[in-house]
Structures are given as structure tokens and as C-alpha cells.
Image (cartoon, rainbow, N blue to C red; front, side, top):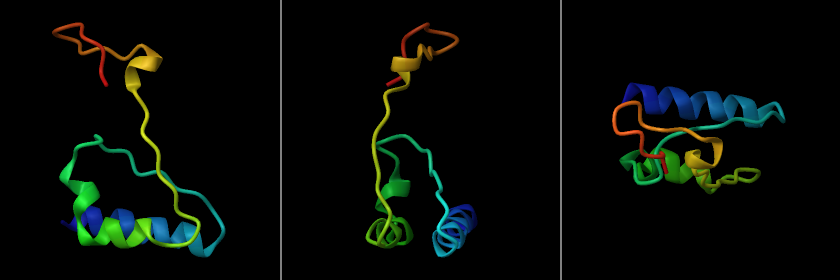
Amino acid sequence: MPMVRFAIQVARHQLKRGKKFIIENPKDSALWYTKEVQSLLREAGVTWDSLSMCAWGMKDPVSKDFYK
């Protein structure tokens, strides 16, 4: 999980400097359940939301179904 740890490190770097960050991953990804991400989500100033990519017209290139 080096990439997860790196993303958390970058997020905390941004927080310490009063800056913002985004971590994008599918809503049902195991990433959100890792202890590192769960710890980050409890920190002051950290919020989360869910975005349906079909709202932006994003479709699967093969099936042509909208992404959710």
C-alpha cells in the first residue's frame, strides 16, 4: 500500500499548510476502509462527498453505459 500511504502523506502536507486536497476513488473501493484513510477522515478540516460521474456524461467506452 505504498501509494495509499503516499496519498495520505500528501493530504496531510496540504492540511498543515491550510491547503486542500482530493482523493478520488470508487465509492465502494477498499481504499476508504483502510486504517490510514479512516484516520485521515477523522482529522479536522477533512470532509468527503460522493460524485456520480454520469452527471458529467462519463460513459464506459465499450458498453456506453453511464458511470456511477
